[in-house]
Length: 283
Ligand code: FAD
Image 1 (spheres, rainbow, N blue to C red):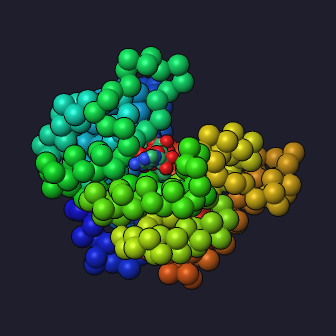
Image 2: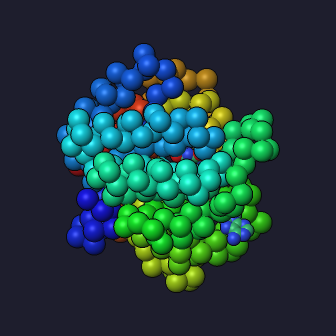
């Protein structure tokens, strides 16, 4: 089912993001995670895509299998930085053949040391990919938004102007980068409204279960980790960090719900426990 249609008929959506496991021996972990999260009735689940194109087959495999084996509504991420228009068209054909209705259209980041000649010239930015998909096919299209601004953006205003270009090119909804302080999200929504961005915006949520891992991760995506959390978790046990992180995330999500957000998109990192506990805590 198209996410755009669900967004029209429901006030609040739950979704889970997974990545295709690199190693075959980790595949059962993802199957278990999905089995444990399925009872929470996600409105959709999404599968990430390696921007270098090397995991393309795996993303396609998991997209198909999660739909078929679990009967879940799936959104496939699709990046364009290292793809030709022809390759994108092949992907779209595969999705259509498999009854997948939803795409998260992204530019992607080329992997470090990615050979210059593999950066294709057909698409420079995600809005061009959105326009391309929209002109050819009938998908519901999501795009990425950045409450704290994208790392390459000169400023927050430019960042939101570029988001507006993605929406004007045909995006139906926005899924945000993870953030831990809701003020960034509320300011982002205000900027979006001022720029006439009228599509639903789903906040990206990641329960912190290990502060060192999150600090490494956020250095790559530019999200700010609140100093109070860093202090409270410093040098503490895994169990303690998990407990504090889940508690923090429940409060964060409850506040987002109170402010009328359209849903919660969980970056699960292919693990179920923290997401489950947050959803239980919100009941
Ligand atoms: P764009 O919207 O093209 O923006 C990229 C940069 O260019 C930004 O700084 C923007 O401000 C600037 N820009 C945009 N348009 C213009 C313009 N017209 N002129 C000048 N500058 C412009 N990466 C993956 O590789 N695989 C994934 O599966 C994946 N999933 C993601 C899911 C979510 C929810 C999010 C938030 C991110 C995800 N990413 C993924 C990361 C994403 O690919 C990177 O953040 C990437 O750097 C930007 O992608 P984008 O689609 O936002 O690009």
